Image 1 (tube, rainbow, N blue to C red):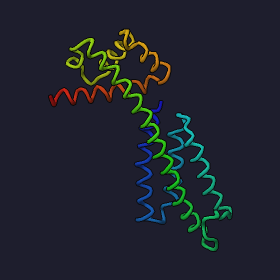
Image 2: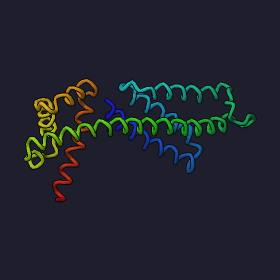
Image 3: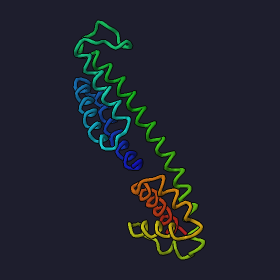
Image 4: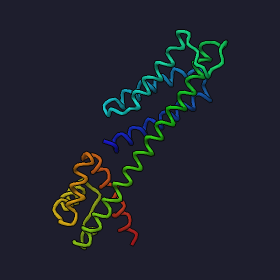
Length: 190
């Protein structure tokens, strides 16, 4: 689930960067573009039950409250509602961007740690079966084969059980696919 969340956050980060560019080039559209992004991102991430959704909802509410006369403490009073909302949206965008990138970094760190453990287990498989790397191709069959071997090889059963308890299948597939792609890439360069 973390790998899916990571990919969806990366997509949203790219879209958010485009919204940020609107601030510089077409500032009259910025607030609407940011609201649209908040709504779309919230819908896209809702199924993954990420705490970032709560933040997106709060940011929408905060920006909407400006239309009701609220002026955030960090925004100079006396400006038009449109300018106050634009300034608040720009600050909100920065806050949301930081949160998204922080979440991506945290996911990357956790996936890297899991990948390291899987690489060690796959290295054990390669020692037990020297032809393993030569037979691998980047496809679901290779993922399924390695996963099955991890569960059947006595030396790797503990790590197999660990990952069964720790990760959902989509994360296991994501990690194994990445490892197989690296093996395949290195195999072609030797």
